[in-house]
Amino acid sequence: MFQHVFAEMNDMLDEIIKSYPSAEGLNKQELLQKWNLLKRMSDGMLDEWLMFEEKMSQVREREMDKPASLEPEQEAVTALPELHLECFSRGQGYFKLQMYPQAIMQFSRVVTDHPESALTRFYLALAYLNLEQMAEAGTHLQQIMYLQGSPRLKGLVCNALGCIQAKLANPEAACSLFAQALQYDPTLTEPLYNMEACRLNRGKLQYANQLTTLH
Image (cartoon, rainbow, N blue to C red; front, side, top):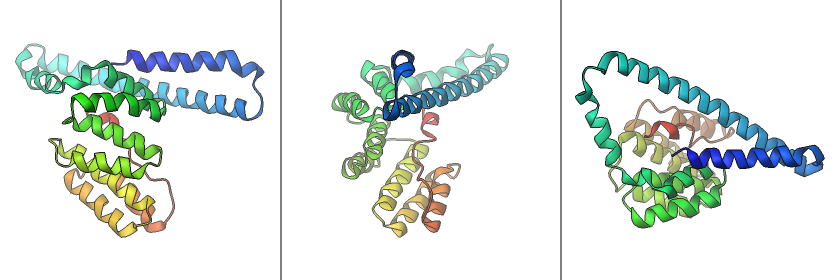
């Protein structure tokens, strides 16, 4: 799943190494932005990997003599075959690199074959949202609410719908959706932040920071 992510990151880094020494002006600023993006991604991946390894270690210590206890998790993974598709992996890679048009192309292919995939539609909606294409984002988000999905996913969908309303200058509707998001999952922090941003009429809306915890 991560091969395409690292392939795109390496391509971007190769471009920086090759072009930065002779870059000037706007081109140099764009390369610096790409470098900062790669550094944030690298640091984030390292933190996530360390946390993952810590959890794996705890599981090995407690459950190594009880392999049957892991079966429900294994069944949950096989219940989402689209997560193993090359298009899904490519879409994730493009999404993490903020290459949203390319991500949309890949996730759209997945949705064509798996229209019931709530997670893929959520990625697709966020890609559209990052491109300020509200109608397309809203369509996919509304469809997710009719699909099977975890309370956390439904909460993040309501949060994203609230962000759309906030961008459309409908703060009351936005705050109502943020409150609904917290009803689905009280542990979400993004809706709380966004409610405060709406109240103060300032700050950047958050709608993808907790995406990595979905699956």
